[in-house]
Image (cartoon, rainbow, N blue to C red; front, top):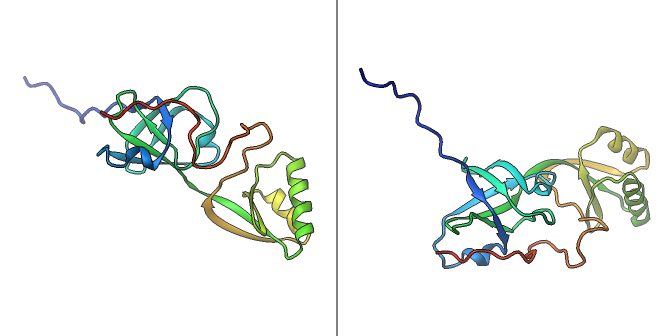
Length: 176
């Protein structure tokens, strides 16, 4: 009697162990390229299962270090594929005021509550929160809801050389 064949076994997750520079890393190498959209919170976790934008199972096994940044490349130990970190759209509040001092005061009050903020000319961005939205409206600020990538400031204890789109100094394997 033939053995019953159930659904095909899922491929094991691609184990990502290296991180480094982004787009230039893949130029001219012919490496397959996957995209990994991550929320701001997900970019802080260097371990765990994720899924690429095309549905490929990924397992992050990265050494301790700073949060992942959009544009950063991740690779398995064999260097067979490049996975680019991208910011996933999130529900954000865009806070604006024609008065720069009022906006600065809002940033102060939000920072005093340890709220992650993205700072842009003429606006603050934070993850949606009804209580904080009410506070900002009470202060006379204009609020807009958006689905957009959230790129918060890294904070006072981030490395001094932190900026979006750079390497964190970890070596990457040479593509084969």
